Image (cartoon, rainbow, N blue to C red; front, side):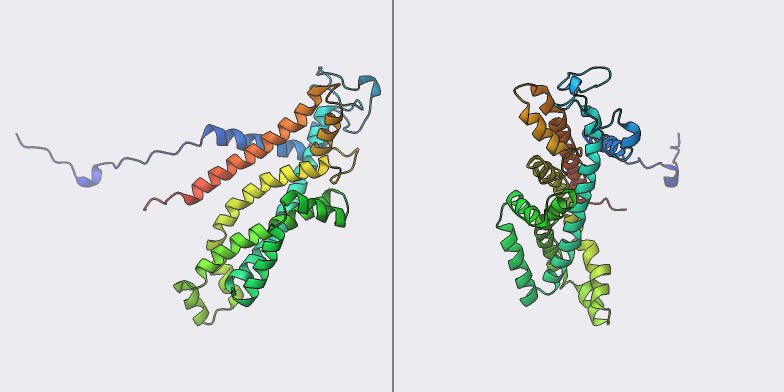
Length: 288
């Protein structure tokens, strides 16, 4: 008998197995998406007016009309959580924007011109980093004035030195690479070299770190609102609602859970997404 040989081209290569998204990551993304959409469409989603008081129902427990009960002023807890998400997500967006707008140019200049200019800029960053984050945020908020925008601008200012240091590290490692030196010797403008050749590679760790700052910004925003330095009452805010619930903890300890648990879940979900992004960016690429 003669062996039947098959052409090599007809042998199908095994397909690489698809990576399944972890269940925890899927849940985190879904939870953040639902919370963000609820905050955006708060006028349509919230069952009640978040600032409408009904003293006859103060500190009421969960019911069909008030799923998570009411606070000490008879306001619906669910409605205040939904509307408070607007301040939470909006405030964090302000803080991260300020940190990025200030920190990335700060670190880029310090990394590309590291001698005199970079030394001065990094000494300024070291001075700011010597203060505890929350204490510095409280001090800046007190000088700028209380309110959502000013408090979150202060948070962005506090986070910008860390962003600058991380950006400087990436730029400093790339400034003397061959492709950067070749571009500069070819007459390419410095700004073009930075934007096209240096920053796309240097900002990878910064993008990952921004997710950590996002979770931290949620925590700091809640702390500032808890201290009365964020959105002023009766504006819905998770931090101020926590402060109100803490004042009634001996009368109605249940009220401290909704805002506290929601804020904790938001922060955990953000950190879970950040871990996934870090793993994705640090994983070795398969050869094509």
